[in-house]
Length: 124
Image (tube, rainbow, N blue to C red; front, top):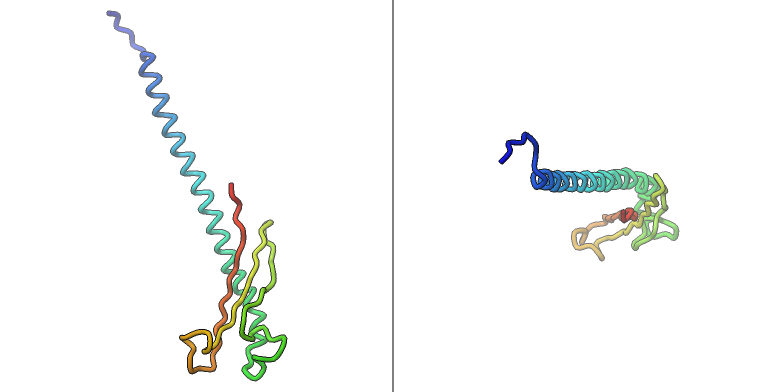
């Protein structure tokens, strides 16, 4: 038997398979991390847009005009505006509830505004 200082073919193949598994694992971590970063960026944008969508409603906060036509704080659900940021459309719907529709507000003259912001994330 010769004493060669090199690697055998089996050793080279096994090391290449192990290296390929490590590379595939790392690449999937980077892809998942990129998707998570994009998702969190969208959530932060929607939180900032929540303030943008709710700020105009301040002009309607007058109890004596709540039930008049055209008041955005009248009971019910109505679509807000759609805002496009980074080629993504963020749409808002706000729902207004009072003591007759929300048990937490029973017996009060308060109204609750729930703003729902939605967007479509890319599938890839």
